Amino acid sequence: MNFTLTVLGTASAKPVPNRFQSAQVLSVRGRFFLIDCGEGAQTRMVQNNISEMKIDSIFISHIHGDHISGLFPLLSTMGLCKRTQPLNIYAPAAFAPLLKVFLSYNGDGVDFEVRHIPMNMKSPEIIYQTKSLEVSAFPLNHRIPTYGYLFREKEPQRNIRKDAIPEYGFTIKEMAALKAGEDIIRHAGPDEIPSIENDFTKYSGTDKPLIIKNSDVTYKPYNPRSYAYCSDTAPFPKLASWVKGVDLLYHETTYLDEMREQANQRHHSTTIQAATCARDAGVKKLIIGHYSSRCLDSKKYQDECRTVFPETYAANDGDVFDIPLEKLG
Image 1 (cartoon, rainbow, N blue to C red):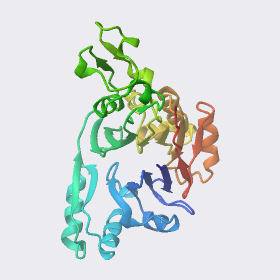
Image 2: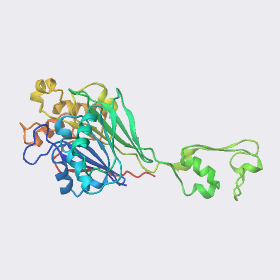
Image 3: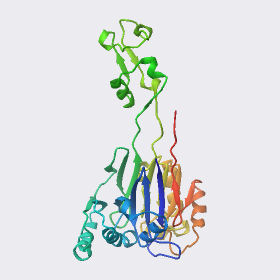
């Protein structure tokens, strides 16, 4: 049950040697999600053995070129490879005319359905769900409409303690209720007493109902994992609460803190601002990227962030971050 992030690009507007523009692939339980698609995304996918045909859905933060310039070539490649499965693209409303132009003039061979789901929310909203995963989108603070994305596993069903099954003789209906987190209430009527060796009166007496607390006979099998993607954004107070407690946070750090004034003017974040968000949100780990072309040494970014939030890791193209499953019980 993997939960793995592959960083495809860490440059900002201007690509530099060894750095392509923003793009990531998150793999969750065998599903692959592409997050932003800057120039060079396909090349990095090939280098990291990620097939474009496995992409389940695409999540675009905003329509600046360094976040979408690799998208339309990718769609063409999918067409060449005879994709038939519909493709959902979650992107700001302003993406619609760009997609229309591409499909009108360069869409020959794109024989699969491309669905644009427009983002237009003021606070976090769930936009995608499977049996085990939900994705929320939330607004960021950039020069144009921009959105972040939070990928979170759903709470797992409870596991029933093996020793509790013969002790209480749970019925199939009761076990389903326990897995759903419910307590079991048994009454003293003969139809309510399971056919087991244990005497009902041993637990409750003949006149009182037997209440079996869920917490006494079940346990949570693992802690759900989570990842938040915050691309181009200036700091704002609500962000830390929206990504609170995630296992892994990606937050752009276009500038070192000495360039805070330029960051403010361009609605970007500095190292210290990103690290402060991570600290205030209580996340487990921060990864940073979207570096200015003026600074080719990502370690400088990492060192500055670590003065505020020690669990900071400066991402480089091709880096892989795995969130292991923490089994409980």
